[in-house]
Length: 60
Image (cartoon, one colour):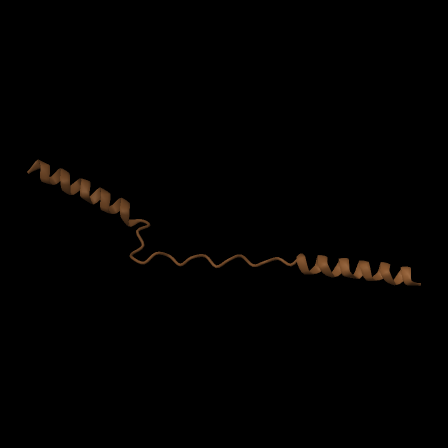
């Protein structure tokens, strides 16, 4: 009788440990964006406008 209790206790303990360690941890929170203006599409516009301005100044 004692052998069955030990075997049952062992399997229940094994099931408990696998359940506790099998939990998925949520991903960490991403860092906030840096302060300032977003320059996603504005950089190309600024570069092209600077080239046009510079070419116009060279022609004068």
